Length: 212
Ligand code: AMP
Image 1: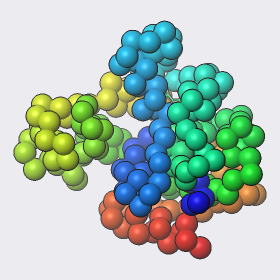
Image 2 (image 1 turned 90 degrees about the horizontal axis):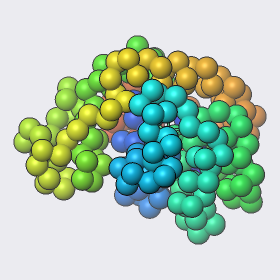
Image 3 (image 1 turned 180 degrees about the vertical axis):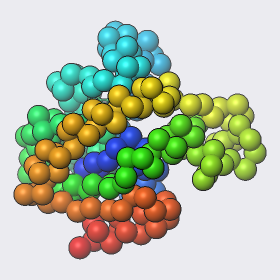
């Protein structure tokens, strides 16, 4: 079985885009942000509880996210990409203990200058039907407003938390936690990828980094 990949990186650093490529290479992708947004879309009890937290760009409680993650992956039978989890050292310890015990894994940090991200994120659009990610500057759909992948028209939407104000909060939350997370993983199994490059180059570097 492939080693699990724990992807660390700021909002907009390309974790979701790269995960889509890795899925084609046989990985399962689990994004805690996607799981939480699905709960909100379903209007479940959990979704109602966390909706305000996401719209403010704050973090949902560690144990809530861990339970959601556990319910949505089977780490014993498949190689997973963890996208958006862990967000802090407490979550990293939970992941280690509850989901990765006895498995092999690598933590990959998508390193990028935070100033580059603002423009990337405010231009990000996601297909509400199949979750394909676009960028109005660097990865436009062939037909405006229509998803190249699933063909749904009028489906390309901006995430509610991809506005400048909420993004600033999300980047602050990220900056506060990332150094301790890197320290945690550096003493274990850790690689860095330059995430400021084009998606194809990042993918190549990622493949090389995890093959070594
Ligand atoms: P993302 O899609 O990873 O950018 O996550 C969107 C939002 O979901 C974050 O701003 C948080 O409010 C929430 N979220 C996602 N993953 C986590 C996590 N591991 N811990 C706490 N909150 C999370």
